[in-house]
Image 1 (cartoon, rainbow, N blue to C red):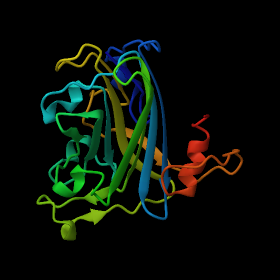
Image 2 (image 1 turned 180 degrees about the vertical axis):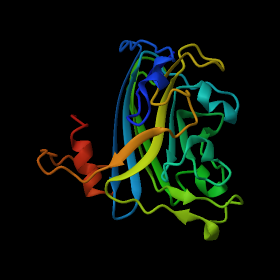
Image 3 (image 1 turned 45 degrees about the vertical axis):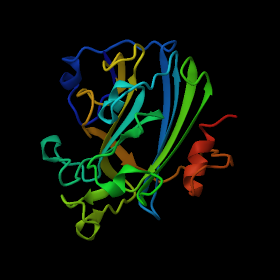
Image 4 (image 1 turned 90 degrees about the vertical axis):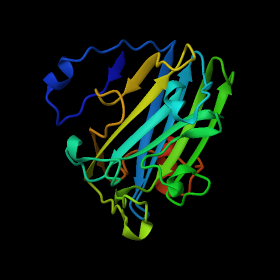
Length: 239
């Protein structure tokens, strides 16, 4: 069962009619922080995921979702759900599952060649690590930056695609989910998500606010090139 986090613009009844699973921190425990940089229009996210067993055993590239994975969906223009489409990139995803299996990191939709690999794409980057047993009880650490588009040409032509101009106090739609595969194979065992749809929707609200100078952000270094993101991360990383 999903464990749901609601959206302030959605009526309570929207979630009241959906069964909600119980949190069991001995099975999976998650922390995630988000940030943005108004000088480069980038979104940043990081997650720390404790899992009693970590599995990456897919045998086919399109089965990344059946392993332990992190799914992110963004709609910068906060459109109605039925208006967002993969085809024109008004909804964009970054879906990653590590360690790499079946020669596949995950799936980024729309799946144009320049979006597939973070090592070659100029529009997102990804890093990860873990403590504990790689495929046993462990804590995995994920960090990603994304430069989203207002829309992407259906043929993937960058000349006809528009990068998003992100502003302070802007409302965007997003969702993220963590797949928890405890049994192997191609069935989801557990699922932690910010949307009642389970996956593949950007329907949760996120407001991009200026930094609060009353907070002691500290000075812990960051793995990505952003002073603001480093300050946000300093509240997250303790070692």
